[in-house]
Image (cartoon, rainbow, N blue to C red; front, top):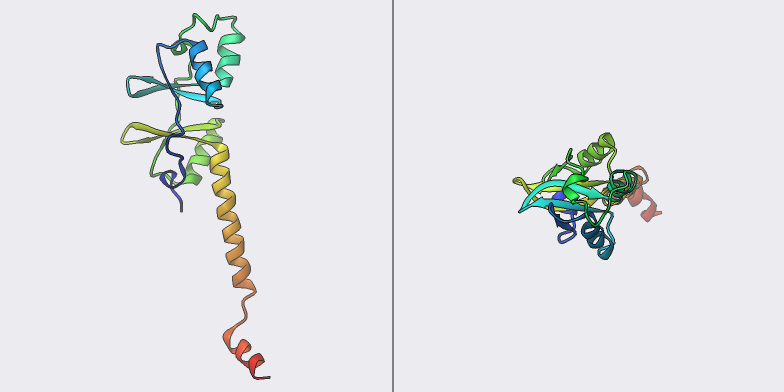
Length: 152
């Protein structure tokens, strides 16, 4: 079974310092066309900031994005996955937590971010391969029948 290490995209990780403003975080997210950024204190993951946070914790509360530190409105109750975890376990975690993005860590260090789309793509590929294998198994011609038809 594939692990997150097998499927994660290296370099697909966008980070923001915890002291940055919401406006700065949104600019980074917009520039990179992503819906979430990891918030760091130095190299330590301390939160994530998503489009949902912008809507629910900034705009809905009437906060000024230029003056509000991202650390005041980021999500800190994090669900993370280990790089050696299997992808189905990660899908289950995301479903249980009702999240669409999952930070991936290795030995406590942030290494990547996966989306539910990334994981579902791998799941579909695995299911397609399994169906192909089962189809081949069900419809294979036994060797003794194949030889008999060649002699006829």
